[in-house]
Image 1: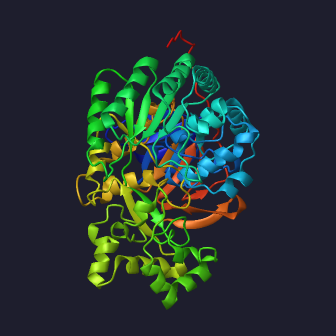
Image 2 (image 1 turned 180 degrees about the vertical axis):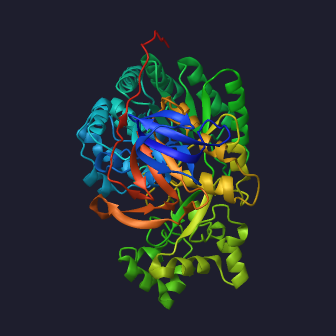
Image 3 (image 1 turned 135 degrees about the vertical axis):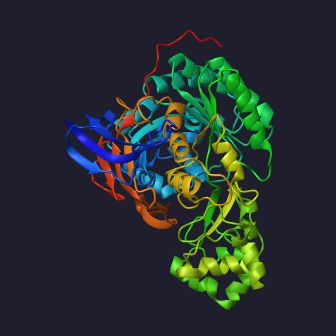
Amino acid sequence: MFDLLIRGGTVVDGSGSEPFAGDVAVRNGRIAAVGTIAGEASSEIDATGLIVTPGFVDIHTHYDGQATWEARMQPSSWHGVTTVVMGNCGVGFAPCRPADRSTLVRLMEGVEDIPYPVLIDGLPWDWETFPDYLDSLAARSFDVEIGAQLPHAPLRVYAMGERAERRLPANRHEIALMRALACEAVETGALGFSTSRTIMHRAADGSPTPTLAAEEQELLGIAMGLADAGAGVLQFVSDFDDPRAEFAMLRRLVEASGRPLSFSLVQSAARPDNWKILLDELSRAVDDGLPMRAQVCGRPVGMMLGFELSLNPFVETGAYQDVAHLPLAERAVALAEPAMRRRLLADTAVGASQWARYLSDIERMLILDPVPDYEARAERSVGAIARDRGMSSAEVALDHMLSEGGQGVLYLPFLNYADYNLDACHRMLTHRDTVSGLSDGGAHVGTICDASFPTSMLTHWTRDRSRGPRLSIAEAVALQTSKTAAAVGLTDRGTIRSGMRADLNIIDYAGLVLHGPEVAYDLPSGGRRLLQRAEGYRHSFVGGIETYRDGRATGALPGGLIRAAPCPAADNTM
């Protein structure tokens, strides 16, 4: 007798093997049998005409705050995700002394676009150390399983105080403390450690992240803390200004510590060949036996721009700032008045923010359809439309954003789209040493909505792409199940085979649709965020318990905190 029996589906088991017709049986939260099953179950689902996949494992999210006040990790859990890993990019909220709370909130506000009032009102702050933070999460229940990484910025501030904020080099005592705290974090359940080395990551006041210029000796000390614990992964995001030199440093960290490392890999128009260099360096490192991977994604990384969102092409102009304080409806009316419209279009000044150069690139912005095409041709760009209509790009952008009562949205792909196609993404996705990542679920709530990556991987890459080669459905599922699980050391999920966790999706593959982003005001203090829904996910299960049916929450919250299982400490000397 089984608890659940899924009959007659097409099983895409997450291993990368060809799909097959079969049944899946579940008992006590685990997969009990796969194949032709004659037994009975308390609950049966007819999956004829549907695909059955492992639950998706999203290893690059920022639910560090949301997980402390909310039980559902939406929008990720709407897209078949059953495990999330947070604490990426070196930002988070633990360890943290009470005096440093505002510092970390301002950093998260700037780096991940989560408003200060949302975090101040939402975070319970019933922790100081990272083990305390894990204990706080462990007392909660979720609609997904949650793993946490130790972020570098709070660790650095905790160990160095204001010296960290000034980005001064850590001394040997501070490095020793960070090493000990990293070891403690992993020993109590952290999945690893993350850091950021990109100038784009700035606090709300524009100051760079405290980790930007951390020296190799500091990073090595922390990596050796993970080695002391005998577990944990390293996660890096970097500008890779000198890709070979920066990769060589990452390689040295892995060689010394023995810990697996992944880094974010994207195509930048400013450095169009760097991603190729990094893939070549990665291949050599893996061939030499080093456990290194790149996290890649199958879509452009792009900003949603509009008058209801955090950014728009006019946001830094004096004309717009004069009305920015008005409620949206009143602002839209004011911006549409002929005198204001002329003034706005004539005011080409931009500020000095890290977004200024992107906001001025109006010609490359895209107008997305209700069912968005993330590989839209250049003809869908604002510049092309403006030329066809005999208008300026600024006029087209303004008119579109004023549509629907000021709720019109533009899309600016600023990474992975240098040539108006996803050919670079295809090469990255099909590389031997990459995994799917970079969704940033829970972050960039007013600018980016990429938690829907898992759905794009199925709809665009295996079914709908018309501008180049596709992936097989087996490849696309493996990239975000078994491969992502392995990348963070989770060996109990990611494939449909006996003994594995019964984290499962039943999907109407032919009817799977990704809808456009929408704005909701459901964060603490009425905070705004972008959400994106899909249809076609018939059933999602976490540990054999159904969490979603036809896109609606069942009310069950079987998920909890994942704690890493460290190995016995080794004798690691620097």
